Image 1: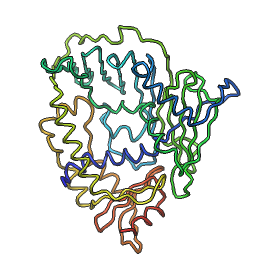
Image 2: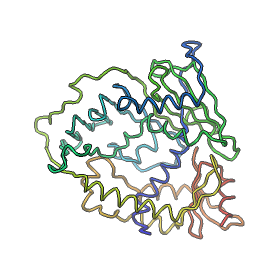
Image 3: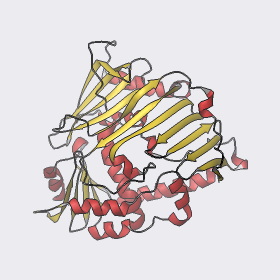
Image 4: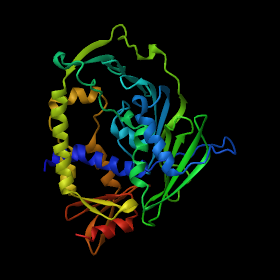
Length: 394
């Protein structure tokens, strides 16, 4: 097991996966009025309609809008985010993303921050990435011998957390562990919407309910929201605050580097991405082979072999290939400071002990983590009682 690589990438991904699992059942509390009232449909029908909508005619219909993501997880004070889309930024506060979608090969994503803005523009095989903080425009090109044979590479970005992507996970949550209900009188971003509400049946889950709003005309997911037990406000939500289902103007997909900007080119080929995909798959398999799952449904706990010393030491090490790819990571907003996050979280931990041993307990509104002195990390959307119970199962 490459512990340095695992801690730098695996722990943030594991944390995101736990939150995503809770969110994925996902929802929307729209402003509910007596009207409009949509035709009654079951949850099964709505989910089927949502899946069909993303597959017909090459994908979702042309659209544009503003997506807001808000997190209020009750985390301890986190290190200051970069403000450029670092994964750590998504764990707290509110962030907006502007999107224009014409088709699968014509889209634009703009991420404004307090002082700067990044733009990803895809237009029929031509990809530009603009970062105002560094005044740099990067043109992404396919290798000549592969142009036309593969879809253009699109850098990973936190903006990928859209209502559509989170809503897909609802299919994995609507099972025997979940109570499902539907209303047909919701309104989101000024549009009539259905609302699917999922409530965990297990008392040991920290999740009170999650809600998914689906547009009543296009069946496109509009907003996802998750509520923690005892909270009137959502602990996490992502959804449209404004949306229009009409083709965006062509000028939105045209990009010209501003005068004085630094212009760079990066060439990518399918072979390069294939190698990276294989490496990531191997890494994911390494992690999966060491993870033990305790419980089921909304009270699932993941148990990983990891000690406090491993966590502190490895978080300070650069990830595999970092020196060669650091510039790319920074430019596309993927870098963060795992070491600072680990230090901040561990300082807030509470010492605990029981028949299973002793360790440090970290609690948030939606996730509980236990780092045991015998070298285990337990994480799940469960109460402290549930996670210490899982610690006793070896």
